[in-house]
Image (tube, rainbow, N blue to C red; front, side):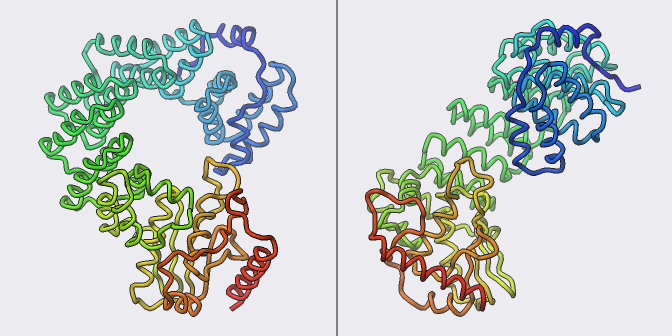
Length: 486
């Protein structure tokens, strides 16, 4: 029979007496505005909790929700509450343990124990940990539970408690039961705590005992060193992958680039990009973002959208060579542009349309990718009936207000004299018909076209007279209407 852990019989009552009533959580408010399979039921839960005024009423609503909803919906709500450190996660977990479908989860139990400790309920936390460990049937299960406890407590800044669990793990008999799976969990947990040397030692032990780690474990240790600023150690761990017979993949490459970009070491970034090309490891969207977000001159251009903004990749490289305070910035950009893997993945070229998808790209990356894309469209291939740029409406952005990527795309394409305009059906898509795009590409627009930005937020230093601006916007509206109706 599977081991099932719950709070001791006295714990729920104690928790109810000591826990203060909390209003509906911010996490559930985000659930109500987000997506996912259970977001509607979570929104209804939030509405019911808003109407409760006592702790008892809140717990009744939670029990009713867990009792009537599916396992998937209940666990999704629990995970969200735990992720956001919401006090309601504790009574919610108590209700989950009483559900008929409940199966004990090491990750959930560890997360609740860490939350209790954070909220000052240390005795309840220790009781939950002891009860859970006592119900587990094998030393391997206990070892994995300790690893989850290390991860949960360290993620909440409780490093000392996390190391207590590590000491108990090391003292177990037989030592480190569970084999390779336990070692993988230990390495991950030690990296979360920030103990890169101890994690590397566990990696060596794993290899010495005949277990074969994969690139993920090497990557975790390398990233831990990199986040601590120990780049030489990070490089050494990455280099040791080949000694273990593991080919460097995109994951390890991205880790190195992210660490170099954090300290803006363009020289090492350039060497690493060249090494990736030699090993045929193509840059990904993440790598593209890491590299370009660490190029301060390009970042400044994309954010400010000044009058001398380069409108081609050649112009951009030339301007960096002549005006960047960072000597290797232009070379890094050239090396990144020499690989077309990111553009090939973001662009769809079919019989019916050419489409550039900017989802997942930062503002800086979207700017550079658009320059690459225009170069590709000008390459001479026969254009299909429609050309479009998908930039979204900012649903996944952390910045409120006008969608920044859409604003950038409109401004850059407008300065180029492009016929692409916002679609009447999809406000996150710029579109134009083939004939108008061909006419545009045949003109010379490499120099900046000084026109008013399509941005609705006006800059105090760059204001245009009202009537010319109004006439221009009316013209753009009718241009968009004609292009869509054709």
